[in-house]
Image (cartoon, rainbow over all chains, first blue to last red; front, top):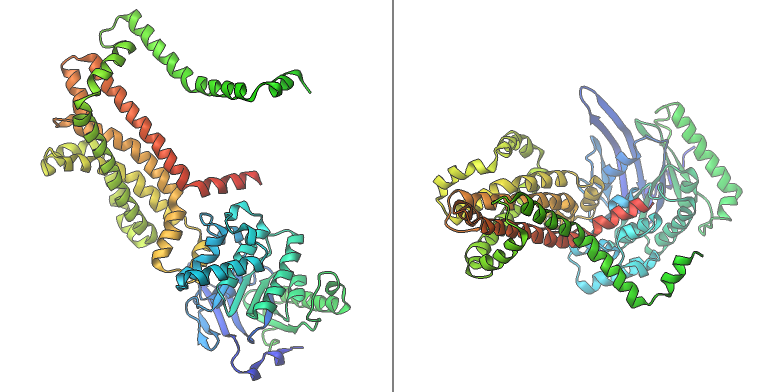
Length: 278
Length: 275
């Protein structure tokens, strides 16, 4: 029932390699095992979605991958190199757009800040910022402050900042959970088009099954906590996706049913499918 | 459409502006004028010697302060006040950032800080006189010892309240220590820092006067006490009025600075209220 043969082991080292990841939080007198044993790999340029029941440790996992949290055991490798602190080739878009942008900086300055830290010359910075803002359709708002924009626009600023950083891997932690449905559809298409244009590897964490199937080339289904990869589904939908036609394909319905069933079984029996992924 | 609306729309724009300006002036001056009149009346009715009437104070004010005394007594006082305030601001923010970032340092220093904070700064004056002599240094120390606390404590709170998502964002994008301090921590804590500075400013004025009342041969506090001891009552009143004016002016200046520094904060607040 797995599609793990699509984990492009043959095409050289994977871009993102998560092996045996485990995270235990040491509480007072008792330990909470948030993530039990996660193993998966993303090939260069792949767009994969992670879905799982709520409270399954998605954020913990993402923080471990981003180098923000030290795993109890297991490794994360980015292009072959071990991740112990936030690597320079990785950008993260957080769910809380309102709290991840600097309210005292303009949109332009927000996007530019990481590039300044990289030590890029002024002209190159201007080029990257303008390009990224144009790519997300916010070229006219460079001088605004984040709080003058709507939620969807703020999240697009955060996406522009990630793109301008020129990462090889882009992590997104439920980035559209807090925007309205219409904005969400636009942002999904934006992610697809940016991914095609810039060719980076994208790991997209979401709790929305439809979103996962619509966006990804692959959907990784997580079990409930303590978390393991329960299933790895290849999304064999046409590459050109469209909110109307793609979502009404019979195959789309099949895939979403399958993911849904997996998540339901994940909710019922925690970690019984611990070996199902491989 | 109601009748008053029509007339106000038809009125000449210049006239309307004039009316608005007059209304503003009325709001600004009505209460001060009423209070001065009340004072006048109270002075006249009671015939109290110590309650000089406003016109006498106004006339004496020009006599006392428009001249050498302004340079010898008022300006140095204000300079000490600003110097002490600036010193306390730099020290308070620097220590506050250090303590705010380190829970261990905070745990270590908290009892001591609470104790030191509880000492009323004026009682330090006799001690500081012994240590630093009757000097500018002593006066600065008195001001700093009193007005550092609101700055320090507010800075600590502000630094501790830095949003964890924003801090994670900085880490992800490899923002280094210096930029982290200037772009994230100080800016993020600036609303609390400004609140601390505002409190500190009024404390600084009080302590400036007190430090000069004890042992001094010049300054505003000294001059007021001097006038009081020589029964120069209207002169004494002018000193009090001048102190009030200085405090008022400094607070207006502070508000201007604050408005600029916290423009983003007010914007965020307005945006969240509007939703």
